[in-house]
Length: 189
Image (cartoon, rainbow, N blue to C red; front, side, top):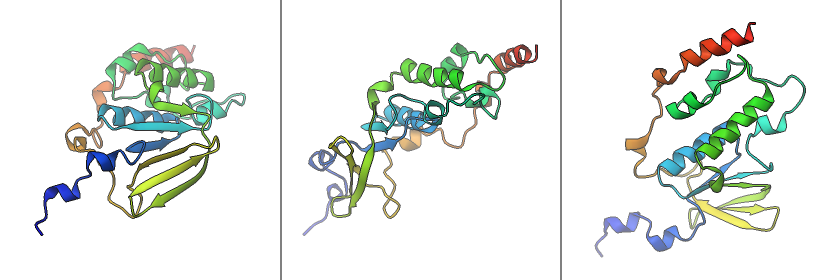
């Protein structure tokens, strides 16, 4: 029997065996970045978060005085000059409410909310080695699935990842020096 390349590539029928190619857990700073990259790559993905909105740590930690421990501009998503130009941090070390407003601004501006599900608590996760599929059981009774890529398996890499990947490149021209100077001047008054 002859082997073909087709045997190693998932068919459309196999791809339909799961709900998403990737499920991101958490809609915090990193989860927002991950869904942005996945959407840009054309990957069918979703974000699940137990909270009722985006923010992760910045949604949960609302204690008095909660703020960045790094300069505000370092939390700006450098993949978008437009985002950096449209947002002005009001303080050198942003307080929690402003950080949460920024994360909501990013999610809404980039239309990422449609790829997110809130109020989702995961009761169980199981990996099926036979089908290379993760199955997640949520507290509301739903079951979601995604293709494999667990630690014992090849990472799930989208075919366009190499040409679109920005990993490892610091784009220093995106650092908003003008905004930083203005922000720092305001915070020292």
